[in-house]
Length: 426
Image (tube, rainbow, N blue to C red; front, side):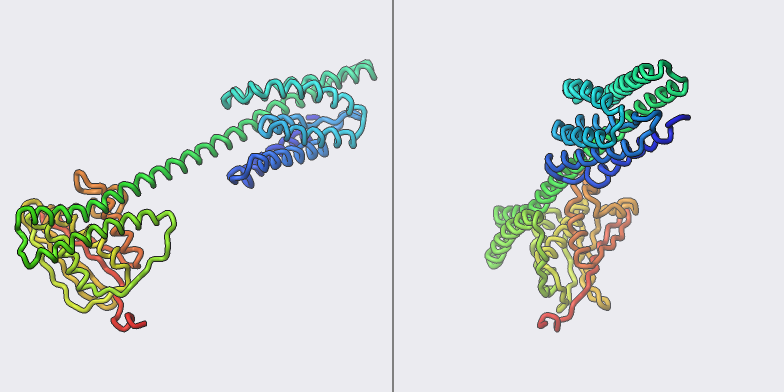
């Protein structure tokens, strides 16, 4: 069919320009001025390339799809973009010459004021309305330009051939189809970008909510311990020789609350973790002393086997946080009277901390979900304490192994790379 190859090449040029914008620019957070400049540049290049590879039906007239990038430059780039593209178009069309120059410029200046007037209506349409609007404008432009060319041909030759009419039919159809494809691609690109922005916003809100819940959960742990000590003081169940020691622990737990708040506030600007050599026997015994009042309130006896010395290179605050989370969960898993056993030992190059409870236990499906955000086997649990514990251990290149059986209890094995006492001097 006459001229179809040249017109389809124009279609390819326009679509390639749109895809180039999507790939190289649409996701960049640039200013509106830079965005308009890039749209103008791509539209001008598309116009020049379309006019460089046109179809010549008779001398002086060139047929291409230049109107489409001009239309897109106005409706998606604005008035400045249209002004830039118009200068490029008129200058290049004058350079090409021929009798069709005057027809091209005449039709152009008929449609440009109309486009500017209709721009406000176009913005108000949804995607389908914009496609129909653009296709109708493309139809009007191509029909008007074809009518000028036919009138000029009649004026010169007093006749119109069937081949000419067939070409104009193809010209009008391809103009409309290319406009439809172009607007569809651009609107899809805009919609996808909006969806990505909404997803990013939702993810940010989710992270903020998760952070707030985790912070509340972590603060609740030391507050629970403080509450336990306070109730013991109220009931006067603490021996006189232990009162000062327990008050000191209350003060330390209050300091831990402050430390947790500082830690979560610093998540926005994470810094390299400060590791020190920890004697794990001493630290575990300190954690047991902290959690013991909570165990007494729940009628849970805490038994321990913690030999010394066992060394670990880590942040002591985070290790305490991890152990308290898991021990507290173990106590809460026990219904009625029960026992929580803590055993620490060194196996080869690993330090193994076992926390075993006589609670209700878990199924294999439940244990496989441990450490996931907001997963908890407790009715009112958030799962954030366990999740944070997993993250702390993973951050030390360690791992947590869980074995459990329904009705018989659960054992958390925290496996961390041990360090030697000599490393303390390095």
